Image 1 (tube, one colour):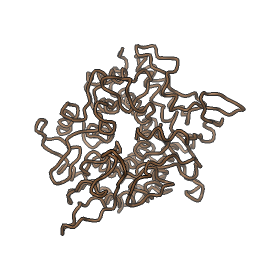
Image 2 (cartoon, helix red, strand yellow):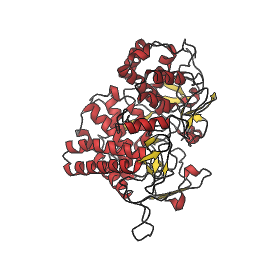
Image 3 (spheres, helix red, strand yellow):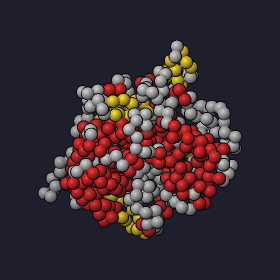
Image 4 (cartoon, helix red, strand yellow):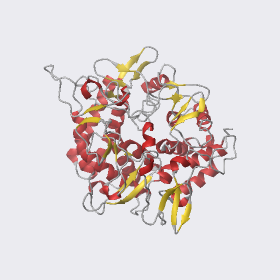
Length: 532
């Protein structure tokens, strides 16, 4: 996604919900108030620069929060959490990084909130449009993970100014997208928002089924994007217990659409008579990058039938899969499909719930049969991708879901022997996308390329270990590699922290905050240490 950020800036216009930020906001070069109209700085430029007061630690990290009047959603629970963590975190640089990152989605990326207009959705339907930060489009995966950063604060609340309302609005909008375009990954704002459409990345794409360009920003079929919709749904249900909400709008329709779409992609490339089987999804793009399109006329590499696993054309990096039985996405999809069956049960949809659980179990059986491979150095591990014929891709990518992140979404226990072997491989130089150097050492991926490590992977490393030394070393690397900006970048050159991609990557910022709150619960004493 990082290659697209230059294309969107002229079109964004943020608006707040009634009663949240009462003064209107217009983007300008600096924060000013003219005739009761708040003019807010363009955050993409703002995040490129250092702002005072700098933190008083060794790294003198910039303050990166916009003024309160320019924040896209103000939530008292988040402000109270920041004050609480100021007392819990001893290191001034570590606190500054938390202070900047944890509220970043609410500060900058809630691009529009409102209700259905009666034509496209019921007037009672809450809607939340969340951008990735530097791209004015809503990715299913990113927006689900951006809100997950605040999961620990989520409580049942009927107010339209609550965190629960943000979740409901995002679920409702994602349900619209999934119900109409289950093969697509990123979308424009709904018509109710009346926002200008940005450049659409799919102008040179040839896709079956053909997406509606006024709705879809990009239509790369990614199994993890559908899993992200289920993750967001389960996060809301687990945090609030509000099952009735899911029966009010299009959630059941969206679940039916994603189950049908993924069931269609269980099959192999060839029919029993050797002919090429019908594929419900094809994708070709005119591009100079092999990772931006699918070979074999849009089919991708051949897949063997009968594995029980669901094909995915693209990875959570938005890169094309080498082998389309993408193991981490199947793990995540299986996990959340089973969990969301509980919601269907609560709504009285017993048959649907049973089908979801059976599907979930069959995918898991397929993973355990075909997704485990023998590595010559590490023994039995999970492969990143397989094709069912015996070929596999031994690697990991920083983007979630990854093999490293499997315990985060509950597919395996962090002490599972196969996971531990996989982890040792992923965090070794035998993983072709493990990047190392004097600045930062973590997994990267082909999306940005060799030599560029992703801080996201370091954060996941912390979230999936109980080893204090590993956590401390990872925190030190995160603190020392922001180039003084005090935000989590997409990727960083392992030999030069001044070379990085994406100054405004809301998901990674929120994940850092989520990790610090996790440490407060698991290992609070690590937050009292100095990381100078």
